[in-house]
Length: 147
Image 1 (tube, rainbow, N blue to C red):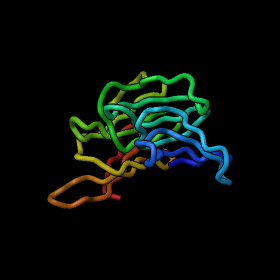
Image 2: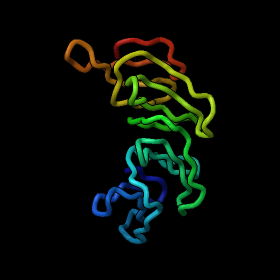
Image 3: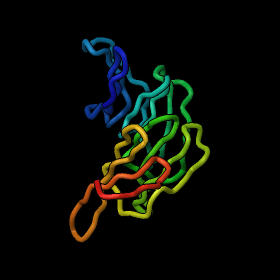
Image 4: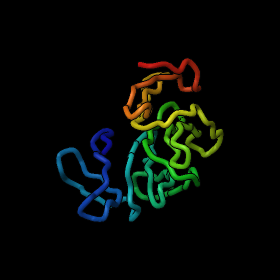
């Protein structure tokens, strides 16, 4: 679920998780894509989401321009400052990639989940000794520390 302007972008569970938009007053419900969609982020005229086979996609709000950004399986997507931040399923580490699909960079080596970007910090949970501990690091992967 993501709200931008007058629209709410969401995964419609009554239609197999397909990508929809609706005006904030409840009118104008429209299917954008037949893709299953989670981790929806509407930013700068694009909707970014994790779709089929846990791949990262972007699409215009009118349903045009669908583009696969990354071939790896991902979760916990956050878009900020022209970058997509996410957990890669294979190693559970945090990565970033530019929203045009270039510059893929590994940022940590932690067993990570629940990723949130705030300013130039990434906050996340690290699975450690049977518990989830909150950590933070800069968006370039530096200054990793317990939050």
